[in-house]
Image (cartoon, rainbow, N blue to C red; front, top):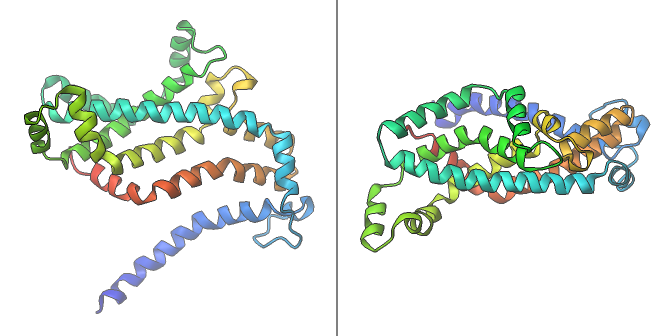
Length: 274
């Protein structure tokens, strides 16, 4: 039996699984260009009459997308930056220094990947610190804390694939401390950095449940929250709701397209046992 004939069942399964994801996405895109009556039918078909600009213009006017976009950009960008810096530096120390402390931290990372976020206790702690009143800081810290276990664990796996001889050679050349990491090691982390960026970006950008608890001001609402309220106000206008969803999804798609070449290698390296 040829290699090609042995792979066709897997190819069929792959096509079916892809269709499960792609068909709903195409339905959203097609519906966002339809009129109200045609959109209400929820048929998987091209629009009979294309509303190229009308739906999206209406959404931009009514849904307060511009303000929410900048809120999401600030919160997501800050969270991604902090996750990137904190996770890669701590993972380097954990992987390179094998002792009781680092082993304990690595065990806690595994626990953090399993245990859910406790909203009440986290909110009370941030309230005592004054980080719940019209500020981004509290929510950003929550996102960093919830992303830290999985991203750090992936970085640890990636560092397993980097020989310690690189560190030793850099030290011989005079690199020490932060200089060793950011001048020698960090440039080698491009695949893992891309993976960390896209995973954190998607998680934070699309989040609704956490943001609704920790953002007490409508002026600070993110795109995910505005989609919820917009759908409530326009529950019968599915063409506008889907147009809003497309607008919210565009930044994630752009980030993925830019970083896709690095993501697979980063996840593969991160899967190496630690």
